[in-house]
Amino acid sequence: MNFNERLQHLRASRKLSQEELARAVGTTRQTITSIEVGKYTASLPLAYKIAHYFGLTIEEVFDFSDWEEN
Image (cartoon, rainbow, N blue to C red; front, side, top):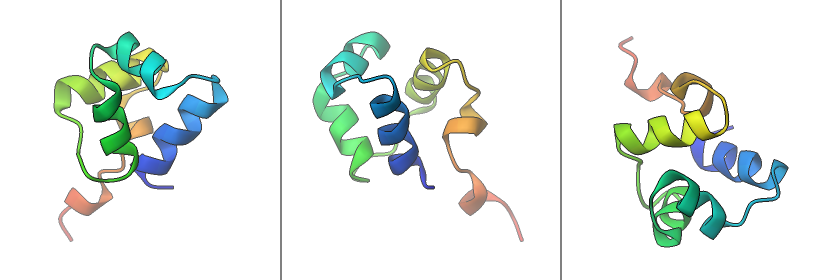
């Protein structure tokens, strides 16, 4: 599951709208929408806020496998 799908799943599991999640992490609904459709990659501070909101580590929410050296 990629990050976009993971975020949608986490949000849906808590029955949160994009607007509610955006308010909780201090961003806009448009930013959450852009992340979920893959048009935007969250900044490190926003990634931390999202992970912290769900009680997870950044690594549990975000997939860094594309960044790993082979």
